[in-house]
Structures are given as structure tokens and as C-alpha cells.
Length: 248
Image (cartoon, rainbow, N blue to C red):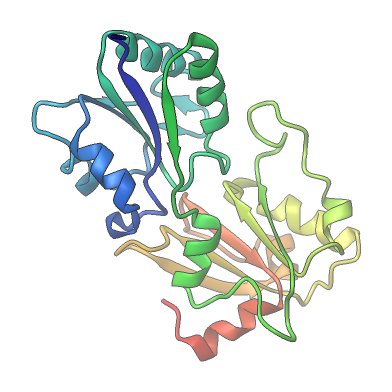
């Protein structure tokens, strides 16, 4: 019989602790070790057994509690010691969460693992602000992109020129610092400067705050002052529906 433990890459959801999946909560309740990210709601950590080891592995822009290599090694080491490890990640593990990197490391090390999808902030946060990403007669497509300058983590940069006219709604994650540049790129490649836009800070939590504006205002840097990450940006005509849907 194998003495190996297991690792579960669990999506914690967009912020509200009630939006974790039932499977994710059940795994938390049986965990020996919880390795958690910065945006995980503290109430979720209370779901783990009192004697479970809790390891903070949060990342902010330019500040990492643990490097990705160290996180990968930690998951492997704990599992090899027979422990049930929950890697608790904000949103969904496979949506800009480096979950695939961790899964690949586990697979290469021969560690049993499972991926538990989470409610991604790309969809949940606009919904909490009263913004549907699609709506009949308004938007039939959307794209979710990272707002990091280089695409994030060494990934290829976003091709804003292709994206500007390719989809109806654009959702930008982790892009607060670069929104002015992003808006200018979209306008330069044909997106209407009058396109409605929204910035949602700490979506789905008690501290949620939404600012509505236009793509032109984003390009001039006259919108979003005082907001702090995490912020989800939504660009598209669907933002105008917010007034009728009563978002926070």
C-alpha cells in the first residue's frame, strides 16, 4: 500500500467564502496541510481541522511569500510524507492561478492529485456588480485576459490589436496598474472610446466597490483613482445594463 498522501488544487472562489464548491469545502475539512493564497477569505481557513498546518503562499505585485518553485516543492514534500494537502487558490486554479504549473510538478513527481474548479472572479465579480458578460442583442462573446505588462509569469503578451475588435466584452484581471496603457491600445486598434467600462474592487465581498466609466476615461487615467487590487475591469456595452440590474 502506498504511503503517499494526496494534493488537491482547490479553487476558493472570487472572495465570498460562500462561493467555494461543496467538494472544495469537504477537502478542506479533511486536510492535514493547507497552502493558501493572499486572496483566500480567512473564514475558509476555519473550515480546516484546528490541528491542520496552515502555510501562507500569497503573492502580490512584486512580493511573493514563497516562490513558485518553493510552493511546488512544498506540495510534493508534504504529500510524500503521507499528508492530505489542500492547495487553496483564489478563483479557479486554472485561470491565471498557476494551477497547471503545480499540477505538472505533481504529475512529474508521481504525486496523486485532483483539481477542484472554483468560481472565477472573471465571471462572478461582474455578476456581483450587476454586469452580465453576455446579453442577447448586446454581447455574444467575451474574453478574459491578464493585465500584466508581459502577460504574467513570462507568458506571451496580450495581443490587444487582435482582441480590440474580436469580442464584445473584455474582462481584465490583475490589470489595475496597466489600465491606462491597455485602454490606449484598444482605442488605437479601433475600439470605440465611448465604450462603457467598469472597475470592480474586491468583488463579491463586503468591501466591494464599483466605478463605471468609459474606455476614453481609462485611457486618460481619469477613472479608478483610489482603487486598490484586486480589481476586475469590464469593457463593453454590457456595462450599461448595470443601472437596470442594480449591482453594488
